[in-house]
Amino acid sequence: MSLPKDPIMLYSAVNMKLRDSYSSLEDLCESEGVEVSSLIDTLRNAGFEYNPSINQFR
Image 1 (tube, one colour):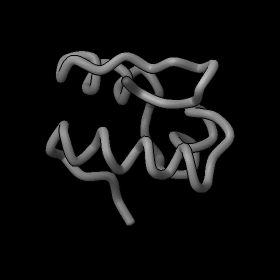
Image 2: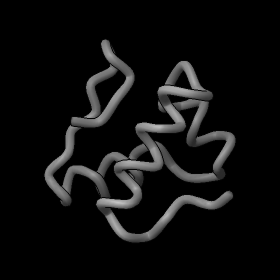
Image 3: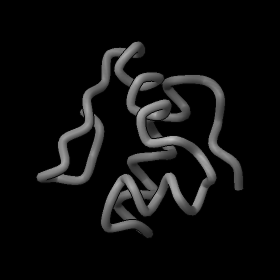
Image 4: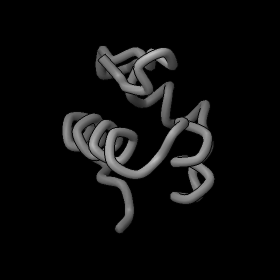
């Protein structure tokens, strides 16, 4: 499954994958073939910040 383009859907999908399947953002990005910085920037532009201590975007 590829990641959605819509920022809100992306936020939901990434947090679900982080919760259910990946112990880190880096692992998720490697598996999905996306750059960590690109994903962080996309979600930051939508108003979300990554919190590594809880492994989620908020």
